Amino acid sequence: MKLGRVLAWLVAIVVLAAVFLAYRQPDTVVDFATRLWSCF
Image 1 (cartoon, helix red, strand yellow):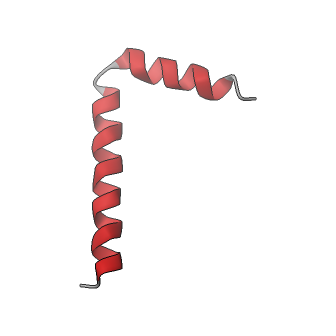
Image 2: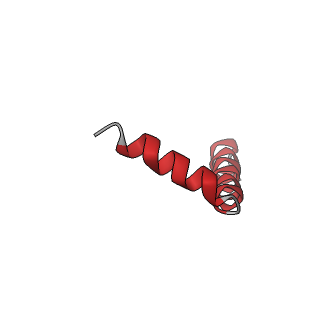
Image 3: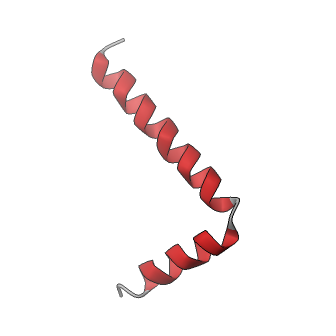
């Protein structure tokens, strides 16, 4: 595999793990949604 493809997979796995961990704490999801909504 090329280095770029391996790096892309690692980034994708880290992002998915971060999302999974965030959903284990509902307060974090609500806080993030509130911050995102305040931008509009």
